[in-house]
Image 1: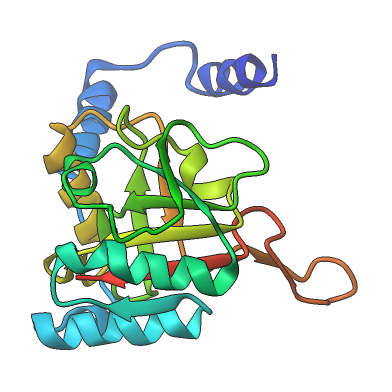
Image 2 (image 1 turned 180 degrees about the vertical axis):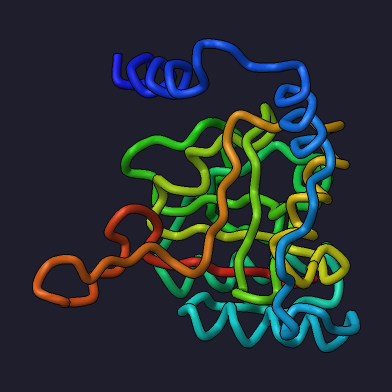
Length: 218
């Protein structure tokens, strides 16, 4: 009802009519995607852009682990999960993950499903990294439901160096290219683990999502 009331007020403010000229102006503005002011710190060569992402991600309390090859991921995950006492991993169904040899996860179970309350760890890929704030961009799809990003206490995310862009404008343009202009149902921008200091200014980790974000940079 509130949405209908707001739109009704706008319609009355426009005199009940929208001219063809105004309609064309709005359509052209939406299609143009004109960039806003771009922060200088995001306009960097690839190597410096990647280094900025690493620094910003760590500053936001994410743990970042660099790997030489994606094939090294299962052994690295086994070591990290063992340090936390985690024995089950809920995985996204991306081909780059399912095609790996997961035998190094000794005495641990890997499951491909939607995450549920009580799951301790999930593994997903990140669509992009955004250097200016050390942020991951993920979007919902059948292979990677959004629950994997928020329900488990520990979120493991895989990101390739070549998928680090400088600024948010570049990220949204890449997403439009990836999806053919059709925006996905959900886009998540994740900067470090979940936290809140709303209550008595006491920092509480895991307030609305994972207590720990671990980024494997390939």
